[in-house]
Image (cartoon, rainbow, N blue to C red; front, side, top):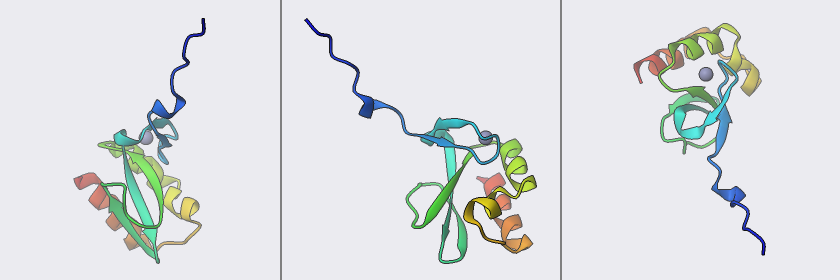
Length: 94
Ligand SMILES: [Zn+2]
């Protein structure tokens, strides 16, 4: 008699926060999308383009990500300071 193994597809999708660098379930994170030169907050996780993730409701992670230029590094793009300011401002208001 063999017992069925748990279905690996049942796993919760995990993503890494670019602030604290911890892997968390996708639903606990908020996505920031980068598409055609535009950065935007993507609360639905369905926006086009590449995306990075940050812990939801965490000013700490946002501050960390900002401090280490995580967006610039992940997207290999030098965003203007105001673009970065704007995205983090939106993030804090989420
Ligand atoms: Zn985090």
